[in-house]
Image 1 (tube, helix red, strand yellow):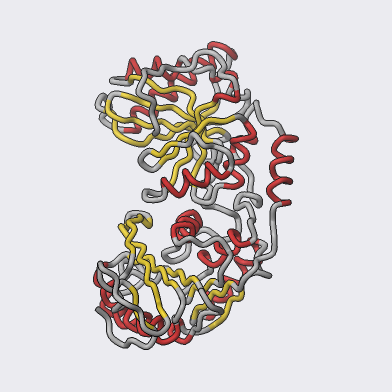
Image 2: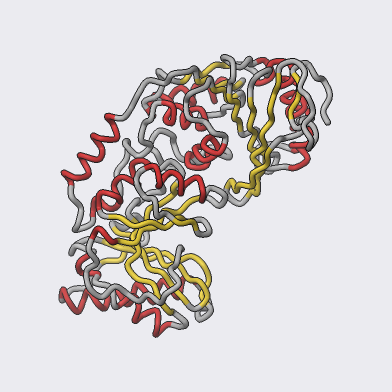
Length: 412
């Protein structure tokens, strides 16, 4: 997690709610995108770490972040950070937190751990140490033992270990923020909603140009594009764990929800999602309805190689299969070659971005990308590749040709 340089210990007295240290977690590679999102909702001080962005705020900021952030996985409220070289130090750190002011009697809780601590053989043992400290403190103050629930706890405590230090935080989100509520969980090789949104924001999508995903699958990228284009808050259709905190203010949350809902606008340009699989098309249409953007997304049953950009300056963004999970890479090379050819024939004036998890398949596209960004789709290291597709003749720049002319039939 994001750390200050000075030594910080457990917060033994209530911290004024306008000074809470907060952390938003994200997929590696999206930290700067998330920081910019936080700045847009008023957190100029947001600072990036590895897979996290730190900021400060009150209860309204917690609600706002959960409702509006597109690339965050969770929003955490840090309650303690300090030395934790072994069990005794970690226990003392956790026991110093005023859990009785954070938990309500009758609520269940659980502790999960991440990272590595030099004084612990396993994260599970460290999590057990924090659990014991919480139980002992609450039992001493309440006279009864709080309930621990391994599955679906009311309150989830996050422990992050880094060498001889630890951070302890309270999860305000509950289910990951990628769970927008519009897509059934599971299915073959899904792209998370937060990563899809991150890809779109990295591509510069803001709804002010036509959009096409020619291999849309169940529609996640196109739906996230519609949420951006309509300025729809991604968290409006779900609940959050912070609604079970003693400090939860229902009226304040309702006001934040109303403010976010009132910012919605019509999509100004076409958003097209295409797929040749009739079942995927049906699922994409269903998901768009559940997301409330069916009026903004045109889902069509068509082969990717036959789709034409819906207008001048179209942004094409897609996540074609990699070969690791959905098919053999050798069989997919022909698809990638065909996609590159389709870009050359029909993509004049468009910009295309592909999220590719196999370098050999990326070469099969036959076009030289003008930009490469490293991202992780789960455990798979991917490249987000940009292709500039030009009309007519394009003069070479000093650093060589990086785009492709419409009508070119050969790669680099």
